[in-house]
Image 1 (cartoon, helix red, strand yellow):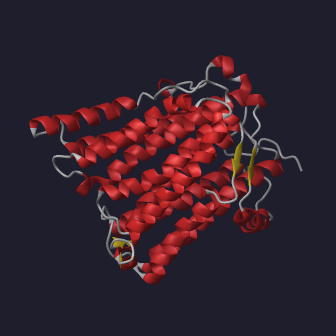
Image 2 (cartoon, one colour):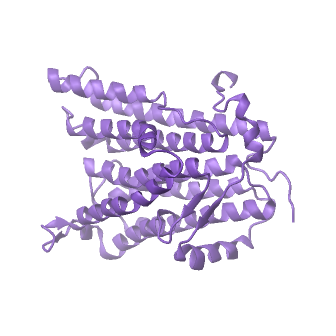
Image 3 (tube, one colour):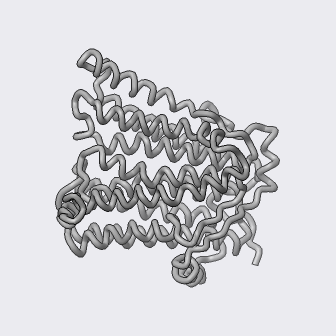
Length: 377
């Protein structure tokens, strides 16, 4: 395994891990009056010897389970009839994940086992859940094997990535009265429950009062609109610590790989999205998850953010292959094989990142990842 080891934190910055303390608030009424009290109640039944990271992992496991069930039932068809039991069960598992996501922080404070590794894993797993649940949600909303399925994933990934930068620059995470972590997450469960109750056909009904848009298209527009009206407040917070031009310099990598993916779909010579929606979503999803992890890692270790990650070369290859198809009428590399390969590589790169940050931080702080290090009642 030593050949797989890579230290993402410079030796001169390891000491920052020992002094790191998470700072954040959540002003959401839904969180403070319903979700948090529910987690406090459930915390009574969590043994003191259960590590916070175990609860974080259990939350991720809930989403992985629903993701696998959707795959076995629907395959690579991102539209069509979905059994009601699967939709209701997915909605339940999503709320269960949300409860675990609230429990881990409370358990960390109760046992005094908070660590920078726990914060990174929490953020990283949350970004993975946007991907995994996104594939199920786009199926429930009947977007099908089209570019809209990929766009539906990209929409929530944008604020998630930018808010990670807000935490990096401001050294705290303060969520407003309505936010994606509370109301946004519950709305995902509502989508599955509403689909189960009203039927999948609900999403393709047209709205005569809104240019004959389908309901799923209208909802997507509302998601984009909410993104447009909420992000300026985040930019204003970051502007107090760095210039907007510097921020966008850090966002270039994120913008680049998303644009490349959309470009490769739009100008595909073989309509590759028809058979490879999942591969496209895995490619940008796991790339984004690692990018979020890198921001969180540099936040806790007080390091400068890199201008780009090495996985950028994957997207350069995709871009050049798409352009070759436009110019020559045929791609140098089979588009389906290429996107499947890049999805696999993106996944392995992400696993490599998780392994090495867990190894380096746990060794530096002399802590166990999935065990309580000391119980302080």
